[in-house]
Length: 328
Image (cartoon, rainbow, N blue to C red; front, side, top):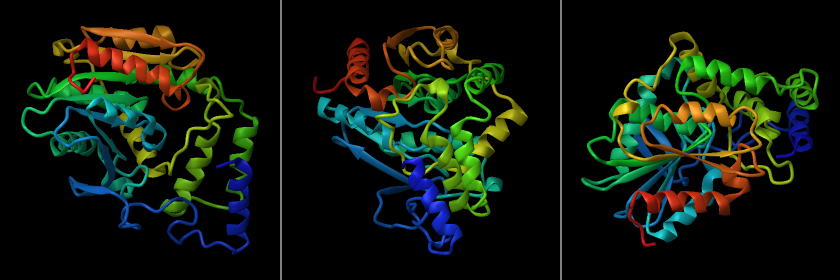
């Protein structure tokens, strides 16, 4: 959505022409508001989810970024279904088109259990799985692996695309690099401030809408292609804010047990991203005993959407390397 359209929505809402409390007016309806959306029931939550490929095929589970993002911009990965895999997409708790929750209803233990149960939901006994995680999703996959290892042999590997950090100290350093690219009086923050004159995040839809404004252009460090913006449904403002508040309060270290994970993993980065630098990604990769780092030239953080052909080629090379069976 272009900023001009976003501003128009704000103006219409302020003028009383658009009821911001009515589902679907500010951001798309969730699975609770639109029963026709594909969904699964997991751990007391209704999650937006869909699969591509045969249900008995080796599973590739896609974990989107955020926290609070959605999988819409990762859908080019559905092409892997043609290789003989079952590709699983799902919006995490409180994010995308999944069910919303208040901050008091969210916890990190809950998110970890969500992922475990989603893995169980899509894999029968002996059915192998590889994670593809982007940004926060790559952190999420690492958190799971640090906790559960290869989960009884089920997790055969992971493709980790520009994770921000695996420890609190690393995350602080990542945010410093990310925020250093923001122009305090730049156009992006000016547009957000303008919109907030007309709307206040007093309910979930308003909060999601305002948070989505921050996602339109992205941060300069990400080096998104302005001519090929990554699509998304909605950004879960409450989920994003609460998860970040929890890890800031409690800290985290998802590297304590990674040395025991003897599967190969691959890190894929874009060379233009000035927050997920080569040195930072090398530091993260060193937490795994068997990790390879691949760089795609001429692209930033949204390499899956902007450069799907190159990204899929690197993923396929990795899957072949680990002999993760598909049709090819």
